[in-house]
Image (cartoon, rainbow, N blue to C red):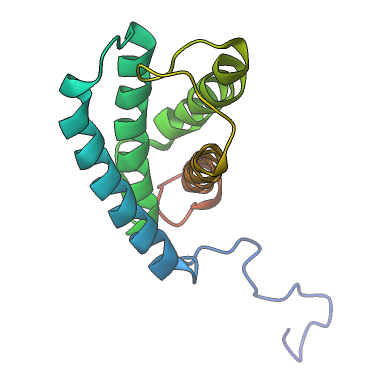
Length: 147
């Protein structure tokens, strides 16, 4: 505010356009995701009775990992509109794959899912990945021109 005009608005930005502070955790999460993707890709040929939905899930997981890379390392990959739509596609697929299929007895990646610690860890992993995609698509305006 200037001394001459007391009614002048302050010169503070209304929107935060800086990188998030917890990027180190997301980078570690990204590298963990890469390791799990490589191991999964190596194991896919040996898994019996894979369905089309299993391959679709794996493909979406790879694309989500690319979005996680962009979020963790503050790099714009593609256009923001893609990631906004992808978030909702991933959310619907995750609900169906993680919450509907296991309770109907349909095999996922060749085996019927049992509700145990691995299921809970996988669910937490999926939620964290979707959270990163949401943040990337909607909260990282510093990455996207005119977002």
